Length: 223
Image (tube, rainbow, N blue to C red; front, top):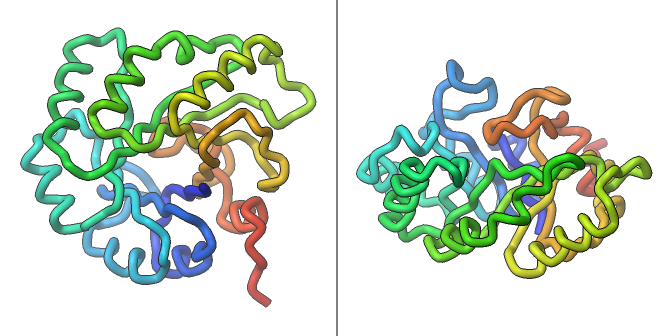
């Protein structure tokens, strides 16, 4: 599976017809430079046969009624949200209450696996809670796993692979091509359009230009 995030126009969606899921962040330009107004979403959907994942203004500030209304209006295939820190128990409770109110499959983003922090692999209970609340895909940023200089140990990578075997993770890293993606048992990959290295809607810094995303996903450039 290939998911591309922060799509902002029908023209971008049309060039990404070969991917499986398009992600859009619905909000105002004051919040993020690749946010789109809700009225632009139907044209993005119509330009591609890909499934649509919609992320809204940070979900902890949204009521269930506001999410339901947005989902009725936009009709996405997935509701996407940034998972809260599992140590913040009150935030987790509110998040779970909201997710259980929503009957659309969910994408949970905001996860990281770094060479000095593999703590996500110790949070199986939290991830299982999210799965039980309807999360269909987990999105995680890795650190240079595709590069020769990967500093995650062999035992660490085995632990990561076991987690990926249990849950449907989409991974992002500095992949130049799909063929560069290591097989860690992941469900698929994700890419985010934006200025190179800019902070994205899910706090990731793995954004790249649309031409780079097209090259990475092996889509032919128009002549």
